[in-house]
Image (cartoon, rainbow, N blue to C red):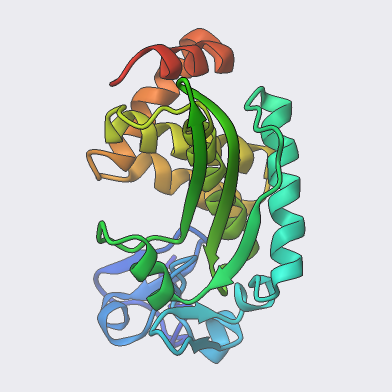
Length: 241
């Protein structure tokens, strides 16, 4: 049976593309029609109930937009829930008293000058006495306007950074740290059990980045063999994966 293009409604002739959600598109639309930065759907009144472009250029469709986190209080509540879920898996961050704020894309780039398109940033300012942390202040910043699943995933990632900071692990390899942070996101997404979470999990496994993607897949294999406690013990004792 000849497929029908979800975007234009016409029978598709020749090559076509099918997205994660089962929508088929004429190949000609892929470059011409904007895609949602968060789910990959082509944005149109018919396919996604429209959508919008944020002032910083990010595009979000009408399916993801109602779930976007745009209020600090909502974000803080979700951050707390993610923290509690991580503790259920054995990732302990105590005491947990973070400063939190949703911030703009430009502010996020000012905070994190390593480059790339980040969705969050965490800091841990500590006072050390004889190699022990005697006091600290943790701050977590998340990009404003993320859909809830992306927001939750980013919270888990940044909280895992806090886990490393709070144990004074600052000289481990980027692949070990970022791979572990993505592993924390993976654990939380698995608990969500939604199609949106499954889409993000697929992205973690397909990420070609040598630090974030390859690092995650190595940590995931390690955790499959040793369990969460084995992975965390490894992260404390070793500097690279």
